[in-house]
Length: 236
Image 1 (cartoon, one colour):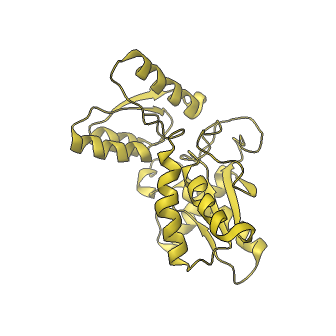
Image 2: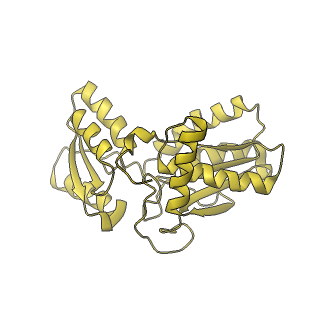
Image 3: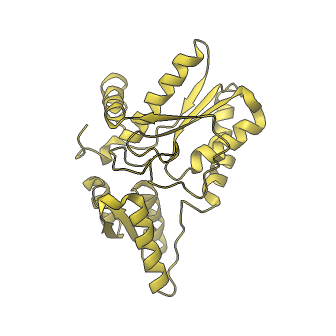
């Protein structure tokens, strides 16, 4: 399975319990901490050139599946179970916690599963009253129609449009610079005691922009989707 790290860690946990062999493909510039954690859990890593982004990791995983009978690839970027679980769990949790009062939902697009699943439920329940905002790296603005490029916001900005992403669900795209995501992650650690990674920093940076636009008294929801312990070797 191609992974930026987090889904790979989840798969490694399951495979360790079930006794399955797991081979993960990942760009070679992703954090050392995640590589070591995956290897400790028994996964085998095949690193792909950073310049190829997640596209290269997906291609390498597909080659392995095609060359080895019996191999199976969940393919998180295309698997309908990805947004489905967010429709059934994440969206329900958000609506329950806020008693249905959600004015905006902001989410970085990695596989697109979170914004698709949550966004579809919020749109069904709240209609046009809720604003749904996608977040992507400024240096790889694929969703905005730009070119894929190298960036430092690991976990989002896969360098292609994911198959599970419902592009009709979001109202706006906010592009975030690497430094903006990194500085927000540092602020969250030092001011809020939340040790998070750059994709969470990007989400919060974008969510604050949305909140400023909506004004006081509005509920803006975003996702803190990674732990900073997996990024201690990454410059911030």
